[in-house]
Image (cartoon, rainbow, N blue to C red):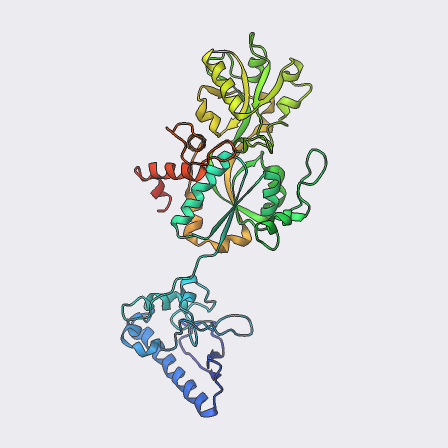
Length: 452
């Protein structure tokens, strides 16, 4: 291996220079005369490049375009020569062109042609070697099981795909399992005091997805914080950053028909003729309605509070299958009956029954909000996304109205027929619904504006 020692007077252009530059010999043993020849050749090349920076401009691209022989040191296939610190010499000796495409070059600004920062533009000259684009890394995206989270995250997935991130793995589990796979934290316990996973970070679920350990999820969304999903996220804020807002409000509560003579919890309790059954839908495991899964709904304080207005006035919550819930609510609306349902915004029932509106939950407001739907990314996985991708994730905003609509489309509401051939209340057509929303918003340039 030849060694070139050098001295430079132009300190403003060549700062923090290494004292030696290793030149690859392609593993061929050389005698002393060979070493001197290579060392002298590189020294001449080096000094010509120095002169070019002053004669042709700082980037030296004009000089490179005229002197094709100077492209000889750039090797499109060899490994980057590494020094003891694990840094590649990058711009001299063997250098894969993908190095410049990915910004892997660690050398200081001003070294050679500012190393990768200025070599890459020079290589784009018509007479130069083509620039090899590095493959983008795999992105692992998770969403908590529920239809509105599903349609929302698909918008972000399709945005990343538009930016040429094609290697995306999508994972969904119930909230208590998914979030430890993202944070690496201890799993919470169920109502019986049993941890929802066997290992820290639900590592066994990560392994089931083909990963060696937890955390294995890079991005999650939509996460309803700071209240609803705080159970699984609040203690791990050092692990992730909030990188986008998908919709402005998520709130669980009681809903009544728009013709009801009340708009608050206390007004409902005092209303004569109000049916004292609170109609809900069954969406737990094996209930056949994963698109409406809600781990926080059944335990809401406004329902469970033994001294609260509902229980003190003999109101009772009753759950129905999603098909039966739809039929019951549709029938009661048609008959203009006075009744209450428990659900949330945003979700597909709002699209199916726009006549229902949320009540003011009064003393329970702090239990149900405020929440916004956020996109979270692990701090140690941000390197997988370039600056443009991070910008687009932060720019996208869908809004409650559109999430209601998309989740409705995903479940066959607001469309002439299901958007996919696999639809049921366990499997909404989320990818198709998000694509429909994107397509409709290309015409008005809203979608395109996220990429400006």
